[in-house]
Length: 638
Image 1 (tube, rainbow, N blue to C red):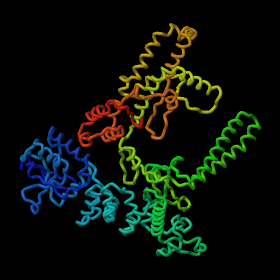
Image 2 (cartoon, rainbow, N blue to C red):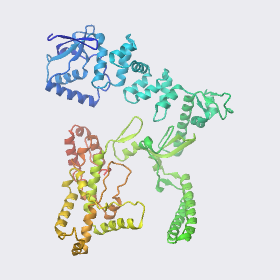
Image 3 (cartoon, rainbow, N blue to C red):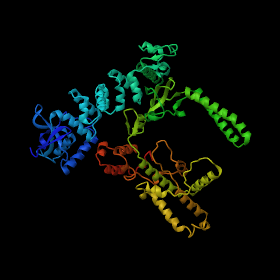
Image 4 (tube, rainbow, N blue to C red):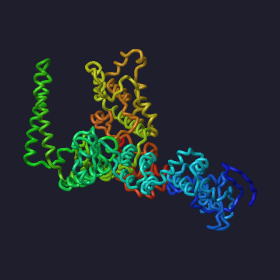
């Protein structure tokens, strides 16, 4: 061996030298075991290999010998990523068997400590690997203080890691798969009973908050009056299942007070009852799926799992009697509407005297309509696409929500690619960045500006509406024309890369050049000079100036939000395809490759996924532009 040097680092003796690549081996004592098969990890190995090929190995591998396993070779305790990078270089022929690798020799007894320390110092180890490594040292006889000193941790942190090593194996597997957080695991560690840990995890609600997990794991007593599950199950059913209620001198009659001694049991009974009820409702009424959960809310995470029902009249299968009743109600509502419009023409007390009974009649008719809809059956087609969930209301009442559609099913029907998270929430594969949302909304605004050049009468209406609102109305009303007055065209162009080659910008620049030459000299200081243009030219000039103030840009993509240019587009019979088409620069190059495939699929283009994913991103964007050529299509988020 050459260039031997001795050193002592963190009380561990090392000797440095070089060994041939062919004598290096991986070892189970290397602490990093998690995420080594992920795409990002493998990409990192290739990047590291290129660095080694260019600048040689800058950091020594730490190795030890183990003649019991294999003689005349060295096992890598620390430097697994570097060894994998060398393996890659060997496979591609960049190095040979005798390539000299710089190493530091240590004793086998120090291998695990060195591995954990180095791995954590470089690319953070997965928590599950760290827990296992600390527990191995403890099993080998090291005290908490010794382990803490070796790693530079606080003793209480080492104790926490050792405590987590004794969690239920199923929970540790969830940790390895990133399906449980450290805080959730800590909450469950309040008990050493693996069955209680697992029951608490399985029975907790979707969000599985550490507070709820800890309470369930402890099986803490709860007042009957505060427990919503007992309201679902009933005290008798809870007792029949072996549950107990404790009373003391301060509690009232047992039917109204006391403490639940088995909260985990009562929660399990309640959730089971909800599931049984959901199955009955689905089978009896013909829904395609069913489920149950503790709470169901139309906002938050549930809104990312389900589309909540908003049935239209065609989704109901009315009986003849129900249909006749509805027809009568709609006729009456129409008459009330006309009567209220006439009453609005009156003034003073006479107006309110006329409106009051009409408003009451309208409310009564709407109530009657709601009662008919609540009692009506849904069509089989509607039920075949949707399901039912039974949950618990805020006051412990059972809530049955019919007509929910799983967002993953909706995406499948609409040919959209989505990712389903571990908590059931659905995220589109195509992620629209704030920059892309602003860019595309600016491009659309430029197209609307160009279209408005040909519609001077609509530009006049926009101007008059804006002025009239200032005179006749004190409230806020939406108007897409920014007549403050501020030109927006330049801002739109700057925010939309690649738009300058588009049809919209060409038309806007031609119009500006035309008017710059046509305006009479001195018009800036004397508006009367503009009267020489004639009424038609003035209207045309106004259309250009109003167009230049339009602003339909957004700062981020909001799926359910409508553009403030929507009514204007409708009035002009606007067609975006006349001004915009997707290109590598304005769209494809700003999406991930998975997003490109998703959008191409939505456009009806058949894509070989494996072949497409093999492209570099720039080439994939160009390929997407070629595939979409000639197809009139814009993405949903535009």
